[in-house]
Length: 275
Ligand code: AMP
Image 1 (cartoon, rainbow, N blue to C red):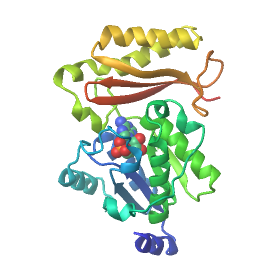
Image 2 (cartoon, helix red, strand yellow):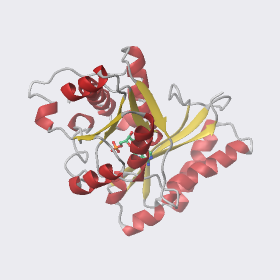
Image 3 (spheres, rainbow, N blue to C red):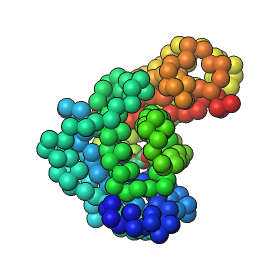
């Protein structure tokens, strides 16, 4: 990978990297299409990264369909699908990990304490392997995007980070490979996750500014509309620091994680623009 990408770089070609864990859906494809339109070479990495899964999480069960992924990626016009073996990415005595302090312990980091360390580490490795000018990430994983941006800034990594909007199903559910885990009954309740976010944004537009009131309203919404759901967290946070906001008086976002059956689904919505 390094040899190919270094050669591209030396020829003055701009590479866009789209890091993924596969089982592609329209969200992944929108990142690939953006990359195709904005770079000379497009590399999509497909790697179910073990270091970002905690003990007891779904590493082994994570959905995979290599043949379908290949044909979808080809259809999006990418140049190279990079799917390294686990043993090739991590030597047995692999011992270097990148920790983005503070940000990594908030939101998803509370229930997944080693997750963002794994993400930052694998993303840094992919940057060194693919030497991209630009790397493309979805805003669905807003915390991941924030962590990667912070790492790139702090370590002076010469790559531009491009975030792209969340792609949703027609009923509003954010597309996710993990939606495949949902039973029919769970799937029927899943749109409540996003509809609840819209409800909270309406409340903010109607003048509600108290974080706690908004959080409680979301909890009540889920209890009423997705009784199979179990909230991991719901927080009103600053989109840049991810710190909870007791009171909205500037840029604000609502971020949630909800367990629905075997799936743990995340979503977010900007409540008040970044000024
Ligand atoms: P994953 O394969 O789930 O690790 O996701 C790979 C990339 O696709 C990440 O940058 C995600 O944020 C992005 N992504 C996943 N789901 C969506 C979605 N529904 N809309 C936009 N981007 C997404």
